[in-house]
Image (cartoon, rainbow, N blue to C red; front, top):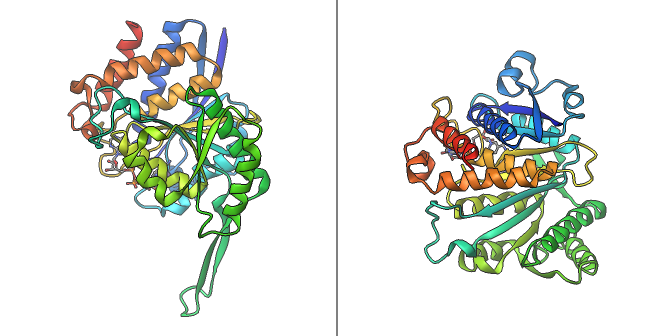
Length: 356
Ligand code: NAD
Ligand code: MN
């Protein structure tokens, strides 16, 4: 029997509530499917680890993850530690260390979810946004000099490389090609950013020649926000830089009903390293430790993980179970206007898998 080795990193805040829920659902799914098993190993890295050891994860942390088939991640972010330390010390260390250069975020309005756009029909909003995940605005290049003095300067330099741009745009074209609409929108800002984004546009045009069956268009990032709200049905697959993608995917999640539902995969398409799957939400300081977190974003991330592992059938079973549960308003958590707890939603999804 196939055994998948999965690293679980709950991290901070509600990450510690939703990751165990994801593990439980995956265990039940494997039992019911009967053709594969999971071997989970949990790493308690994050804010508490930082308070004890002065770092978010051990210096040799990646070596514990390298031979895993995938990573299930919760959230990094602690009320008492600056956000740039928690983010760079854990999540980005893994994304960059394993060169997970494509951040993939599907968005749909699931059954039973009250999405905020009045004129948007459920079938109008079915997107996958690919965010460049290894360089660009979050390359980490820059510095501060003369700190605290009137002459202080600070820079964050956006770095785009031909290799980095080409590989993520090619990944997005391939993904677009695999979807029924075969349509890709390349997000840009080459009117104002006249060096790197112009190269980005040029590379998009070059790569597009490899995919004659994919229709594609270009949209400036500011106009893109309006298009997502006003003409959602004109979008299907989208590719954007790290910062642009970061912002557009939060907007997408909100338009689909809640941050608590949205999933993401940090993918190494070449499969040299394990890919990492996580809900897009953060630690949610306002509700942590209370059992109120919506675990659906984590469950949907597990669906992406199963697809990545090649378990398409199991992925479809889990997605169906999720949709049956969201369709029932009595099983909505607080973020969706309901009163259900994390454990209620988890139990319901497990039951749904068993009765498939
Ligand atoms: P957040 O996602 O933690 O919370 C935003 C709002 O959405 C809060 O009101 C929260 O209660 C609600 N919410 C989020 N997920 C929910 C869920 N599953 N169920 C119910 N409600 C949910 O974003 P924030 O407040 O901007 O950030 C808090 C911390 O998390 C910060 O330290 C931030 O850096 C970190 N963060 C980490 C990640 C990550 O690790 N990938 C992502 C975003 C934010
Ligand atoms: Mn973000």
